[in-house]
Amino acid sequence: MNESSLKKHLSKINNIELRYFDSIGSTNDEALAWAATGANDLSIVIADEQTQGRGRLNRRWFTPKGSALAFSLILRPTAAQRPHLSQTVGLAALSIAESFSRNGLSPQIKWPNDILLHGKKSVGILVESVWSGEDIDSLVIGMGINVYKDSVPPADMLQFPATSLEEMLGQKTPKREEILLNVLDSFMHWREHLGTNELILAWEERLAFRGKQVEVKAGNESPISGVVDGLESDGSLRLKDLHDNSVIVRFGDVSLRPVA
Image 1 (cartoon, rainbow, N blue to C red):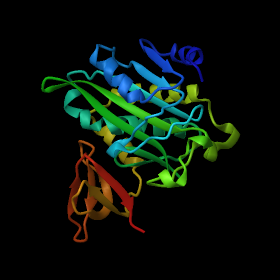
Image 2: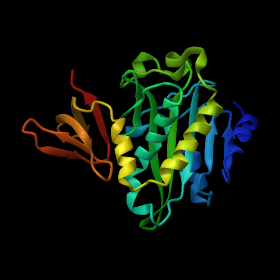
Image 3: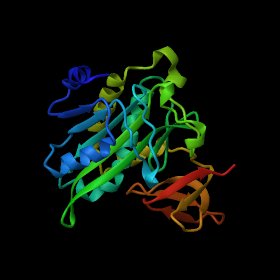
Image 4: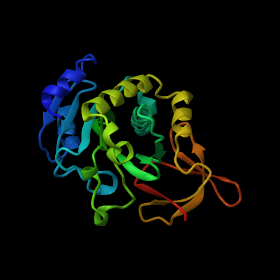
């Protein structure tokens, strides 16, 4: 993967501006700075290597050279999309999951922001905002996809079992440029459905641990246990407790684990 090959693939999509780096600290940091100085909608930052990549809860995101697809997409929401920005992480997750399905895989979305293959994490998503006063000016959607085996972190770094596309597909693993093009193609399709029940239902269909007992921890609060029941209209997670009552888990610094 290099700048020339990326530009060739992205030329199939209109109006995408690209910043490519052989190595960078964080694609999200670069994209946030670019967005704050007027980057266009759907501008994208891609790096072959990240030295300070990060996920949610300030966890490090492992991106060795030549192994993963690490990119950050700048989204400038329309007036119609602004009331539904809580669905953005689902939009990104659904776009990646759909692109994986084109390669014969059966991805599941681990709420709120990971994608699992055979129960192991293969993708992380981090959405950050650029503000203008009290309004959101733009969003930066960071996506990290474990493509080759070297992208899987060592065991002592893992918070959850991890895998890569190469471990699932072997020699049939697509090139990173092809994966990116497929993700962006799905993203632009589902973006048109932001705020609709159609997006929520598609997200819900791929929801990991549906009907299974999980534990959700938010910050320093006591863990919440329940059976994964589905999603609310804003993308919040709905659980059923022991008394079959609905428990709604909102977005924030939350982590979800299945109960053994």
